Length: 68
Image (cartoon, rainbow, N blue to C red; front, side, top):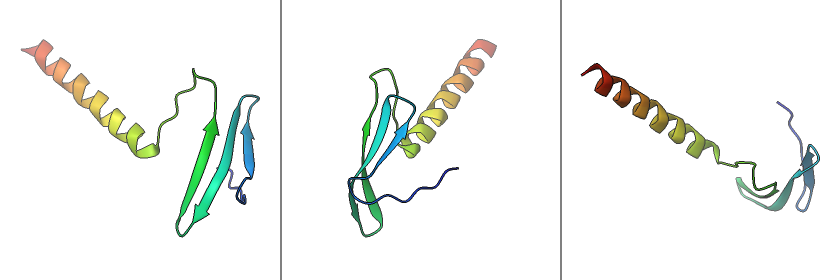
């Protein structure tokens, strides 16, 4: 994991077409802006985790239905 320190308005570039910008910092929080092509999916970590759980549950339901 790469750990960087940035001030407000600082940027981080990923590849040629993704830019992360520090919009605002506060007590215990950071507001980020992300510029990326439309085909790049961006999710907060907790949404990605819950999406994986939903997908896993759906697969289990499909397996149970097929076994019946």
